[in-house]
Amino acid sequence: MFLIIIVGTAVATVLVLALLTNIFERKAEGLNRYVRVAEVTEDTTDPEVWGKNWPKQYDSYKRTALSTRTRFGGHGGSEALPEEKIERDPWLKRMFLGYAFSIDYRDRRGHAFMLQDQESTERLTKPQSGSCMHCHASIMPVYRKLGDGDALAGMNKTHAMSYQELNKMVHDMGHAHPVSCVDCHDPDSMQLRVTRPAFIVGIQKLAASEAPVPAIPSIDIWRQGPRDKPYDPNADATRTEMRSFACGQCHVEYYCSSAMPLTFPWGNGLKMEDAEKFWNEATIHGER
Image 1 (cartoon, rainbow, N blue to C red):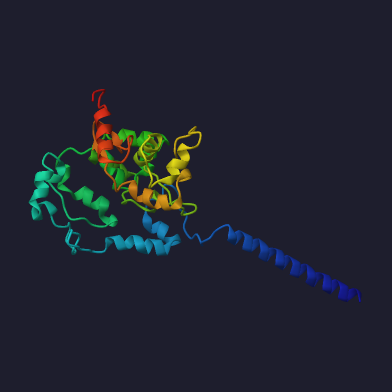
Image 2 (cartoon, rainbow, N blue to C red; image 1 turned 120 degrees about the vertical axis):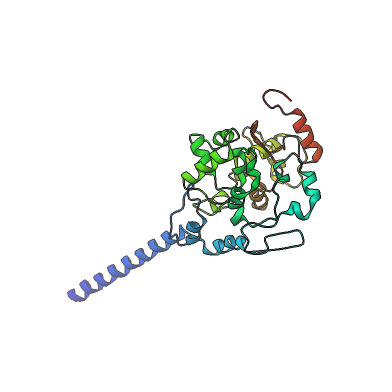
């Protein structure tokens, strides 16, 4: 009987330990919704590294390198650069006279080429501000370095840098990648977000204005609150709005110049006349 009790106790102990171990393992697995095989941080700008954790999303990203062509243009083959749109449609050259686009304006290619195509464009034969890299490179680590940790302060320095100077810095720091996963996703949770300082400043000015924004209900909700903090798209916007905001960090009209930081002219609203009023009231070097 004594021997049976000892054996029974040992078996029960083993079973209880096995149960507790299983519970612990399941709880640990519950903390991560995916198997993280590579560590990604705010400084991981290479999309291939992110692809080790999120292969399905990386496959979608790689599809931006596929050749496409529509009646509006597009990259139709394996040529080094797409065709010149201004040669096919001369009215574009006339429209852009005075701007660098009158020198070189080609059919579009996918996101995978956005940095490479910018580095190869003949528009660089004219002086270009470093602000141009805001939407062509995975540049946030460089902004933080320039601003001693403050990305907005760093971005506000780049308009006074030449494109070549900032481009060299991007390469030297190992971030010569087109806009990448880290620019729109949190490296810990993959949650959608916005990172571009110029967009964040622009959307905050829009929220602080009195302009109607029926398409962005979260701004109306923020306006009804105490307004003790600026509108924060990463905290206040809905998931549906964030899907537009992530693209709107770059796919909007903004202003690049060596005379002032990159600017999204949304302080009076989003209509044409609102942008005109914004620029009429803007000052450059203290003058309108």
